[in-house]
Length: 283
Image (cartoon, rainbow, N blue to C red; front, top):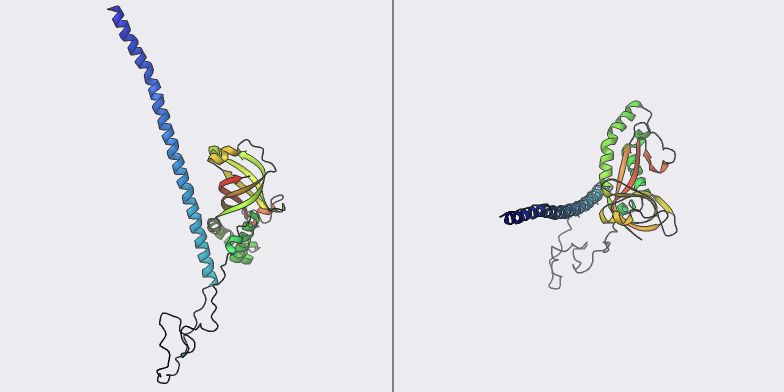
């Protein structure tokens, strides 16, 4: 009797010891599923940001076209005098779907004189604004002068107050429009770790000859951050791909460029820097 009871107690103890192990296994499986779902959400969020940037770019191009104005529609020609009765040798009337020739008696198969057949060149001025961080900041400086004019540096208290009041919404709209996928050649300067496993790298955009075209901050996340964490990067050259964005900062007391940061100065009360998110670095 005592032996049977001891054996039963032993099985109960073994079963009790196995429960925590089973619970731990279940917790591990759930954690892996949660991590996988988080990674899927992060990838979807990146896709949404890229699509939003493309939509913003198209809206900026549309607004640029509207500012420049559409080509004027030529006035309709005055009605030609009624032609003489057609003879059997007269050509057939032109198809109404084809452009009407300048001469009523000219066959429709002949091209209209003076009408160019080549398409108009595509205006890719927006792409030039994203050639480098320096180009992006220069584009914002030009836009600031065009939108505010002399009010940006006015000494008149009313004009200065109006400028400062309008600067915040203008800055937000400008930052939203200045977003584009880029591929730049960069020289890495230094790296630092940030929250949520991110790695921030300071870099300078350069060409093949080593000429510099402005600094930028590179934000690496996920696997890209892990591959560069703890790596000596100072002076290394790399190819950068990612979403270039602007960070614009308002300081109402700042009227001119700060020492050692004159490259960030946009105009009175406004500084900016370029940040590349969703970045991938290749060597």
